[in-house]
Image (cartoon, one colour):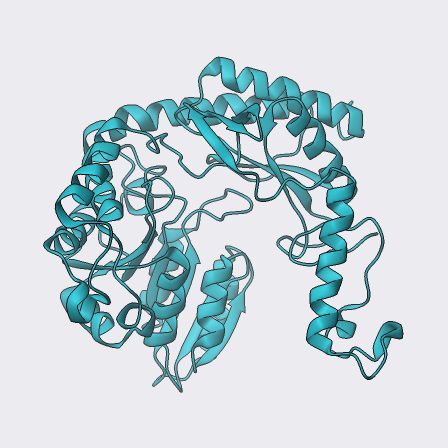
Length: 428
């Protein structure tokens, strides 16, 4: 079976992973610069895929038309988006971004702790805190930085951090950067989580971290059992709401609303680039926690402030979510059910998903690439997910449903996915 690097598919098997570290292996001479060798190896693989016209990464979107996009002159139905409620071009949000630019200019005066804080930033953080039901919030420059900086700041020497094995890379990297003991428990396995917590020293600080909705499979974190276990073992719970904000709960308020457990999460994390169409990430919690992070989290202290246009858009997006969340969430739920039911009816395996993240499991990387090509050539913008982003033998197409899709859009996509699956031999 062919391998890949950074999620890219290669038609010929590359050198073994150790050759990326030691260039004398796999026939590379000792005098060669190992950095140059790694760069050249990736260049060769990308070039090969591009020559075969199978490279669909970094497609430039030129125009929006609801859930449809124009890319490289072709009109395609977008099924690789994170804008779950379809707010990316909402007129109120776009107008707020323009108004903020008119008032404050294009940028800020630097980092937030010095001259970069606008009254708009303070309003944004109050808006986030109010929406998620917390005392205060801090907003970082990206979701990735939010997890990286927060986890590595909270977890010090002698502390333990426990992460679900299917957590996002930003959580994993934050755990690696932290100076404490890093443990990973089996995916959504609360028995394994408790078993590992039992081994933690009584005096150690303990932080359990999980995604609310897991980004590759679309299943939901077992919050009720996790809260009970964390309380029993004096551990704090941090939950990443990147894919659940606007998605879970009757009004889109997230995983706590979904399970009717308000206030149960100690460290609430979320992104501002998915349901909320901006950029950045937030941590919400009590005032002492947020004050601590504002003065010690290096990813916040040493990063420039978000530009006014983004901040204005974020604030208005939360107001739109409060005003329209129920209606949009109902449409999204209808679309998710229709899409998953349609895929399963023709024989596709969609795993355990019950959310807008819908994996179409195909197993082999070459099949995933073949199906992607058919979909892209026939008007559906979707991408494959390959190892190492998922385990070996678990390649899939990841299709994301939104409230902006009409029933007719979803039927069109189902038809194209069915054609691709039959041509590839995935379904009968």
